[in-house]
Image 1 (cartoon, one colour):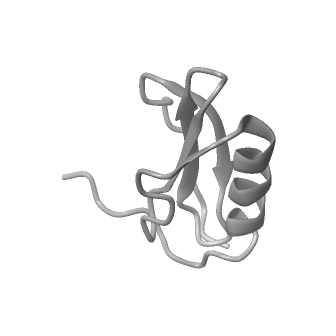
Image 2: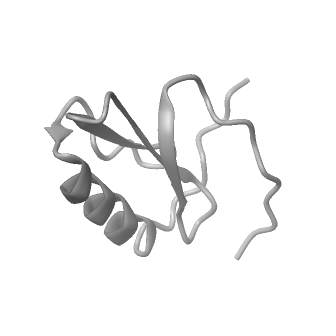
Length: 73
């Protein structure tokens, strides 16, 4: 697994899961609806989930995704 350094969470992120490849699966939302987005492969998109389902999806995806985070610069 690649070495990684902790990053500052973007505004609005309420939870974060680290993928096998080192990308982050971020959960954003207001507590009633949560969106999931992987910084490596982009899974999640604009679909909204109830919080328990969003956490399960993010955790499951993080355990399988091998992509590294997309470059920011």
